[in-house]
Image (cartoon, rainbow, N blue to C red):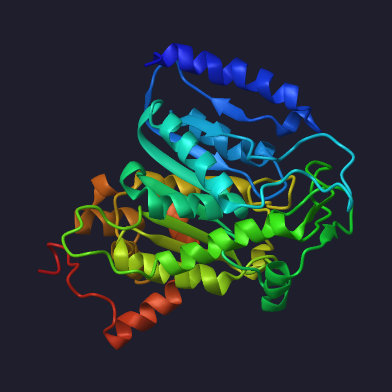
Length: 366
């Protein structure tokens, strides 16, 4: 077994040297690692979007590093390679989802040597990979964060096209990507200028597998939940992927794992599919990072989150509500920021209909 400091040195220096030999389009496409001098209680493993690069994980990686986490943001297979890519010679992206899955498992095992509890996350196609790991390797994962995961596209006709037609798709603007195939002016000139549709098909197949897998009932007596606690994050302004599928995924995950959370940014915030950075169009980048940290550091079921949110609709401050419930130790200091993004109206409607579970009561209620 390689000791921690040796592994740290390899990741900080040897990995970059190896990627330099690939010949990358830009320095921003190198894998990122933020490692402390010793293993940490939690370690984060973040995957970037399809045809993009680890630069997307720079803000959230630094955020969690400053919070005391070790953080890894590797360059996905076949991504970032320099070359004259076009219709005749498309970029060398994987066309078999197993390539991503093997890569994800390798990095998950590596992350497990850098900290006690592993958090996986990703954007778009990277979120799809994180979701697959949350389902297939639930016992190894403490939390999973899926930012606009590519479970399917926002247009079913485009999904059918991706499934059936082998062709080349070129961006309508400068090289760059929003993660699954919608060009955006906010993107820096990084990543590939196009791709062959079989490459996107590989990610779509993985996303559709996740949609089916999360609905499967676990066998009787299974000791581990069939999915790790998962936070699925959508935006109403996202024109690339299906928010409805995100919601269905969350609802299915919640039946299997009560600590699964969900939020969808209101359209008024205008948060695009590329939600990880200000440079890619998210003016609320810091809020997103804080919300994710609230999920990672809380020990609450979604029912409990709804209970707190509902009581806050009665003009009761967060600290009072949590104290009444005796849940101070279960709540992250960042949970109030997360709750500002929770739509409390449907929660209040459920309570008025008697649908919200009534078993959560404070000592004062009793």
